[in-house]
Length: 178
Figure 1: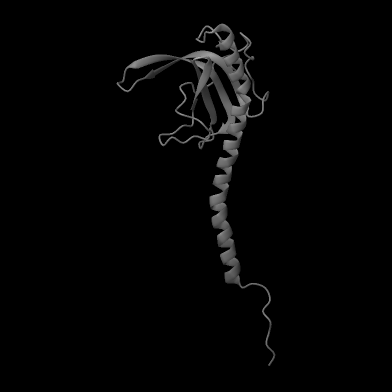
Figure 2: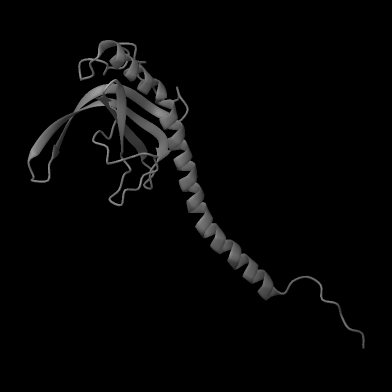
């Protein structure tokens, strides 16, 4: 009797390969989605550099930064508001002073004025909502330091935006901010 040569794969071998591919896909696809959203957030943050530079230059010239000086898009050498589809990575952005009403830890209602760059990035959070960032400048000597807060910041300190240090106070573009 002649021995038969085995050709191809057995059914169990094929099922094992399919199971391994399924497990890898289940892990890889969510991670890939997170990486692409982080890349979009990084692109949007880089696109905001013109605002940061303009605010810093205005501060250098005037020596003052507050809600009346160097804090309005389209004035004092600061670029106009950015609308949807004008800049890659940003759905809209402006420089403004916005009053935010909230409740402090003691349950007392407070009003805070946030002055700086408010932008809606083209990146989404885990709930598929667009991420809003607040870049708040603080004059330090002759320079500006920037505090970045994001709408996707969670209790564990996670955000898709690099350098995010807290939850954004302004979570939507102000009227007229495109």
